[in-house]
Amino acid sequence: MSTRNSAQHGTADLDLVAGLLRDVPDFPTPGIRFWDLSAMLADGPGLAATTRLLAAATAEPPDVVVGIEARGFLLGAAVAHSLGLGVVAVRKQGKLPVVAASRSYDLEYGSATLELPAGVIRPGARALLVDDVLATGGTAAAACALVEGAGAAVAAVSVVLELPTLEGRARLGEHPVHALLTR
Ligand SMILES: O=P(O)(O)OC[C@H]1O[C@H](OP(=O)(O)OP(=O)(O)O)[C@H](O)[C@@H]1O
Ligand SMILES: Nc1ncnc2[nH]cnc12
View 1 (cartoon, rainbow, N blue to C red):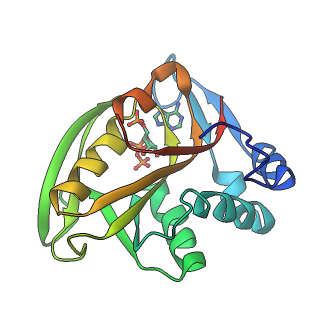
View 2 (view 1 turned 90 degrees about the vertical axis):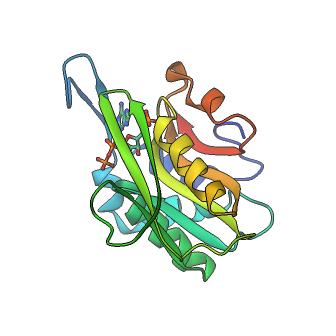
View 3 (view 1 turned 45 degrees about the vertical axis):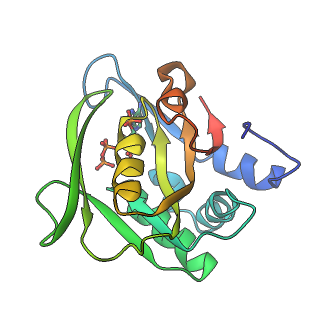
């Protein structure tokens, strides 16, 4: 899905969200331009606009929302609530007491492992994955693999911000990607 697709998204909502993002040089390591969504999350109308736009990722409503640690938890819960759905928290390694599966991956500034909680995704369910940023795509690809490993389907990956130079979309193969903005 293209950025700033005004046929599907309210331009006013997108402008509001875009105005609440900020970039921080050299965080968390030198050379990384880090996109910080804290101001958007702290702004009532900004969070509401972001939630509306992220929830519009699929024409058909999904069955469940998956939020990716950590910033994806906040957005995923908001999107799930707006759609009347539950949210599954895909967590970094070592946080969940009962794990269905784990998946390791690399990202712009390191590597990590994600884990899916056991017994909370119904096989056959259509899951909407939500996160703040799509950069290299390592995180989202790992989350997709976990969801599919549980027998569910990825309806779409919905993010606020895509960093296209890092080619994360290519890493997600055929999975539909819905990015509100690119930088
Ligand atoms: O597309 P990628 O290159 O995988 O990068 C995107 C991921 O990086 C950030 O999370 P981070 O791992 O920094 O974790 P946090 O949200 O727990 O801070 C961001 O919230 C995405 O989840
Ligand atoms: N540049 C970046 N800004 C914010 N989150 C990120 N996750 C991976 N790369 C990122």
